[in-house]
Length: 287
Ligand code: ADP
Ligand code: MG
Image (cartoon, rainbow, N blue to C red; front, side, top):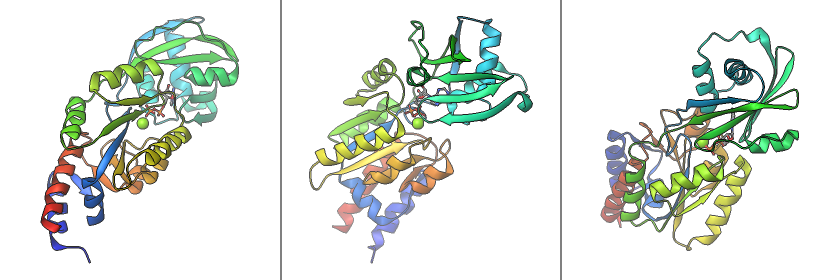
């Protein structure tokens, strides 16, 4: 049976926009030793803006159009930003054979040409050499019919409470914070540094994130728990692998909300430390 005060704890949390799916999760949370964050949509807003277009072939407008059309079927934050920057109605008849390659990008036929848009890994996979890039933000390379056509730079912003979220977890007794990202090393490292995150692993495919979490699970103490916090865009497998999975409720996908044990309804990572405080207070009453 669940002690009555757990319901008090869960109720209090839900009034703060923290949805806890069961009393046992408060107990796990109070013993959390390692917190692993996804980057995009979790610590950053996941709202990208196109900041530069560098064509090698075509005009800037044409390069952006090819990328936006190729990305037109995807819901990924990067796709959304390219479609927003393009700004025009997309004629679905121009796009076919769309393939989403998670953690890498997309492939599609656009006006009868094969367009690939994505990161270094995608270019390596299709055997296209890219030219040196402006590495200020996230780079989306575009290849047309197997030839490099240029790159588009997009930038995300940190959530305003991200640094405070990391600091308050440390104060609440979390031993180690980790960030996992599919984004490039330079981007991952600068975000981690800015936020005071202890460890960062970049360039990861969704499967690599599961492997990383498994390695971290072996590293923690017997009693300590590992929490994973994600926005759910292709991180549902990690959410279920962690001792406790925490999803962002507003941006997050249905699959992630389903797979999570705790949902932060307003997408604020700082709510996690608050949930941890509630859990510790509740556990003091119970134990
Ligand atoms: P994160 O791990 O930061 O949450 P994802 O796993 O969703 O990010 O994506 C990892 C990387 O894969 C992105 O930074 C980007 O380089 C590339 N990528 C993923 N989806 C797309 C897409 N639709 N278009 C272009 N690039 C993409
Ligand atoms: Mg993500």
